Amino acid sequence: MATTLFGISYDAADAARTASFWAELLGRTVNPGATPESASIAPSDDPAAGPTLMFHQVLETKTVKNRVHLDLITTEFDDELARILSLGATVIAQFDSWTTLADLEGNEFDLVRG
Image (cartoon, rainbow, N blue to C red; front, side, top):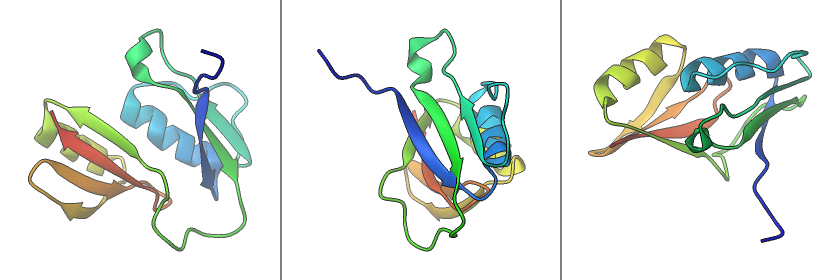
């Protein structure tokens, strides 16, 4: 195969702050050199950790629903939901098998009951 998914990019008002949120949530580390303009989180040695996450500062604020979002899955749903909320995420909607949340900048993601 000639094409491989390298990373997922997020627009952010403060790239370093948003990267720190996602690094804490995913148990990763923000790569050295993070600034409010640009930051990234590389995957760990575990291939299941996923692609590199990149954050880029933009001046405009988020105004509509994401066109792409991350789905995270856990077998410890209630504990993980509480932990994610303690990091600053907010609940947008709750369903039987998943909860839709927003990160610090309003980007939606789902936590799925595994």
